[in-house]
Image 1 (cartoon, rainbow, N blue to C red):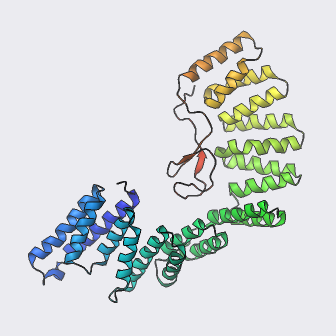
Image 2 (spheres, helix red, strand yellow; image 1 turned 90 degrees about the horizontal axis):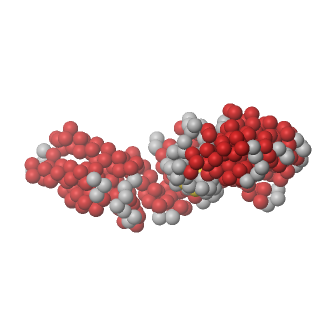
Image 3 (cartoon, rainbow, N blue to C red; image 1 turned 180 degrees about the vertical axis):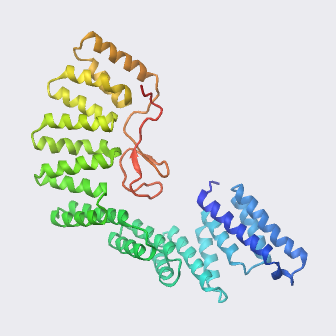
Length: 396
């Protein structure tokens, strides 16, 4: 069974702490026979051993045996609940936590911990209303509000309740001191996208301005605002916004090219577009930029200039996209020396097995996809998806 590394390490630390506690405070066992103490600690050792081997079933068996000899141990109940959830037995985890929370002997801190774990189990079972209520209780009554609010925020995101997401994020920022502007800006952008789909431009503009106040560097808010300006016929401020975004976030340049091209074309400045892209390419070379420059030079009636620029710059950004540009360029009338340079580049490029097509990869978890996701589907992090470059491609 595949074990999530974060849960695994958390459970190992939990069980290790329990075991150390027993050894340090052995006075608790003065009323126990030595054989009983050996059985309890032995079960813990086996549980740790099986967790280190990611053998969930055996770990559950060992910890269940430990509980038979020490049924009051809250930490072992929590660890078992984690394991049940990891194995997909969410209902079993819920029953365990419900029985545990009914105990009148739980300390305040223990009760809040069990409520939080019960909320996580409800959330995993799709019972979001119950989970939300528990997380709110924990966040209002304990010093563990940060964890509870983060869990509550995840539920709000899953339900796409962006107003509630904003409220929880603001509360989390106030209570924990951790900036939440990045997330809040995305929530506001989600709301702006809804208004855009409904044709409510004024509300969309208001929400995008709020998003930029929450996070002035938000690439999504800046991009959506530039698009709105362009549609309103304000090409110059739209162009300025896109060019500034390209300098701040060069990894997004491939996704900005179409909008930037539209800005210059609305201004009827084709030459200015080529010049701006060439300047951008010198600072942030990429296959997408080079391919766009070559295409624009051809469109402007300068196929020879396009070929010369391509062969001069292609060696540093070889990719399937450049392969296509080289093949297309070679089909035009060219001097022999330029054709020979193209042939050499094609030979170099053919030695590399590259996947065709534009893809994105999450910097956090490695998730890949064919389109840009502002929130990674793999790990749920915001703004971690970037264009995946062919890292094994040769650079001359």
